[in-house]
Length: 64
Image 1: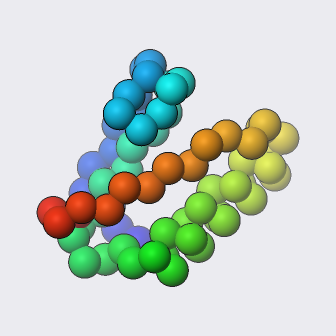
Image 2: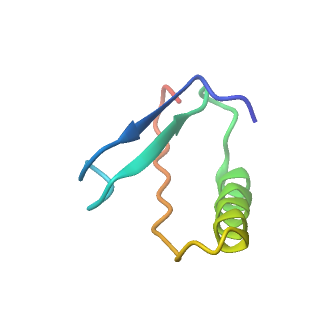
């Protein structure tokens, strides 16, 4: 899925209590099923790297 922008969050934010990463996708490209697959893929990638499980948060809104 293409994304419009990405950025790192060096500390707590609106959705996370710790540092994190944001990927923004264009409106209309992500539905609940797509987000579920994204969460699964991110979790699997982290596990394959030996990273501890982390919170994966998604927020849908009208503009993306």
